[in-house]
Image 1 (cartoon, helix red, strand yellow):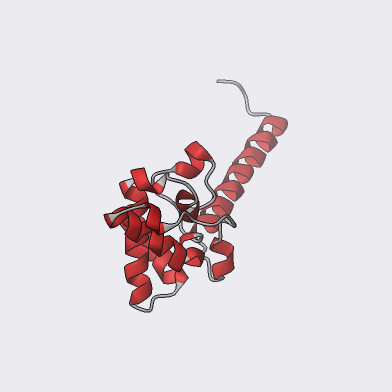
Image 2: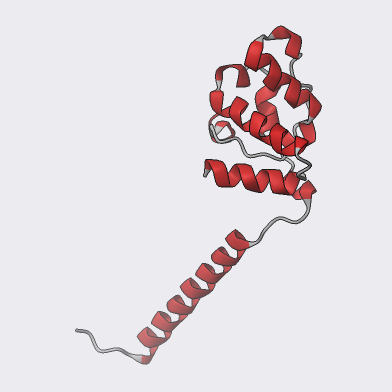
Length: 134
C-alpha cells in the first residue's frame, strides 16, 4: 500500500465530510413534510375537458376534475405522465383526453374525491394517495 501523507489524509477526510454532509442534507430534504398546501400545487391553469364529452366512469372522473381542480392540481400522477409527457400535476391529465385512457389517473381522482367528501384537506388527501400508490 501507498504511504498516507498529510495531503492524502486531508483529501480523504475532506471527501468523507463532503459525502456525509450531502447524505444528511438529502435525508433531511426527503423527510420534511409539506405543511403549506400551496407548495403542492402543480400550476395547471387550463380548463379541464367537459364531462359531457364522456360516459360512465370517464365522465365521472372528468366531473371530479372540474369539481376539485385545486386538489387534483396538488396531486402527483402515478402513471408518471409528468416524466413522459411534461404534465404539471394530475389535473393536467384532464385538460385533454389523457385521463380517458388511463385507469391510474381516474382511480387516483376517485380516491382523492372520496377523501375530499370525507372532509379531508388537501395535505391529508395527498398523503393518503401517495401512501396508497407508492
